[in-house]
Length: 118
Image (cartoon, rainbow, N blue to C red; front, side, top):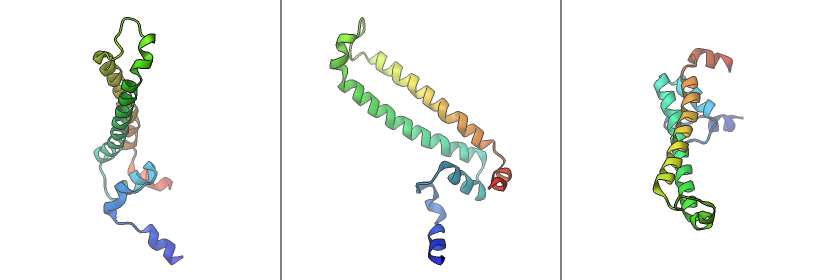
């Protein structure tokens, strides 16, 4: 039993790098005195990293598949830069909005109320 408890103790510097649920990470940060801006930065940072990874994989895959899709396009080149940038920009805006709304809600949570619920 003591061995299990020793594994639960973690160095505070390693909290952001551990693979744990987002709620637990936010809870730890609230306990350590995080401000709402810090929570917002945490959630948005993770979302932006995922968005950039998805956009880069998607753009590479789209460029690789252009020769197969060329026959289906009418009036637009298969490698039209404005189409690629427009689609990537629209997806980026939607992804940022999808990250910002929950992040704002998490930042508005009263830390004492959140800790009391557990």
